Image (cartoon, rainbow, N blue to C red; front, side):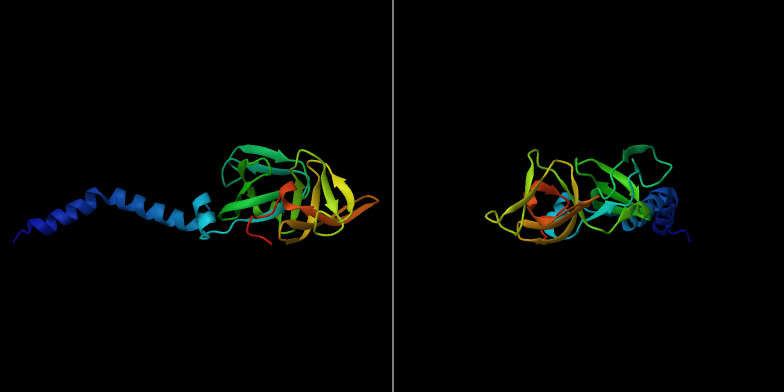
Length: 182
């Protein structure tokens, strides 16, 4: 005997199989892409982290793949980038200017760097306090090796040619450190 209810159920599945496949696909894609929204970061559900560029020429793209249009070409070795999402071998990053793009993970290093973001010359102190001696001043856009973070201070190294500077800089003067660090 014909059962109209079960037949209607099969008819719904057949007619809406495209919708079901689409929902399944979206579910799979959502599991593959790990995205850190601002709300997730504030709530502690997702932890972005910093990396740096491995060379002085790094292409970034508008999407996660080399087939996507190149958005920026970064020309600075060690430029700090904040990873906010990942897809396969691609990382969605935020650069020091706040611009987002995708970079292949092979072009990024786990070595920590900071860049001077302050518009005025930033003092590098001998110790992690304002009253300690100033060993140097760093200009905007100077990239330095980050050793560690202690409270509001970042221990940094700057080595170029015959110049070697080691000291502490206030974290408000740099890009490359999470608020939760230190």
